[in-house]
Length: 282
Image 1 (cartoon, rainbow, N blue to C red):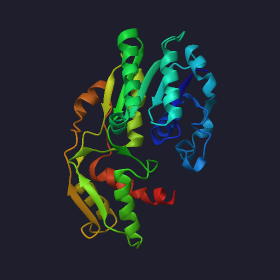
Image 2 (image 1 turned 180 degrees about the horizontal axis):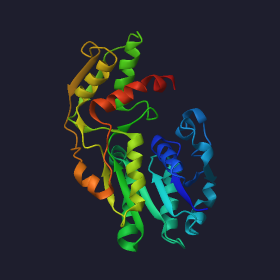
Image 3 (image 1 turned 30 degrees about the horizontal axis):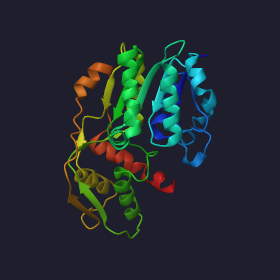
Image 4 (image 1 turned 90 degrees about the horizontal axis):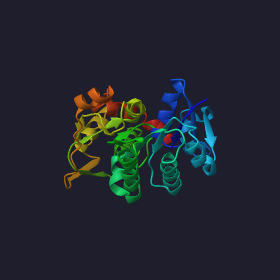
């Protein structure tokens, strides 16, 4: 039975994607280690999807890709050495695969800006498409979060602080930097957009975002409002250098892949606040 390969099921994006594809009846595989680590820290275990994913030994990964074992490959970029090596191997194997696969490399925008190695992988994926005619594209994700997201993200710091204060903890003021409105999204929705990319008539590069921007101040106000708190005594916001524009053309994205975000703005902040307790407990 043909399987979809997902490199990165230990993280939130890959785990939510695996859950979505499994619900659609697709067989899944990942590299051993993605679902074999600490279950408490592994998003695939947290979502109850790990047992539905076949493990592929790292040593066998390139050979299986070259043999055409996976019609679709989703690679979720990360800066750790194991993931970088796995994606490098997948890209190289695709170039000589007996049966061409459809490859989608998904990258968080902030990671793309910070990691030269990840930027090189994006260039290699584009070269597979442009120079060798392979179906290979990228999905660049603007800021997104969920209860399984990293605990040190900006949204996690804001919602976590508000949650802890609502439980009576005494905390030092939270120092935040305002860099202008940014696009914020809900990870479980973004994977629906990612899942649609291999089904396109031709591979391309997409920026995935909600198309709805919030400033840090607005996000903070919504989060503290959810917990019935006034942020004024607890948060200090200073103005920093303006960040790069987060413009997402919602209409164009909808027209190209038939997807648009439905959780954004105050609703997104509320969804994150509702999961703040679980995240704090984890």
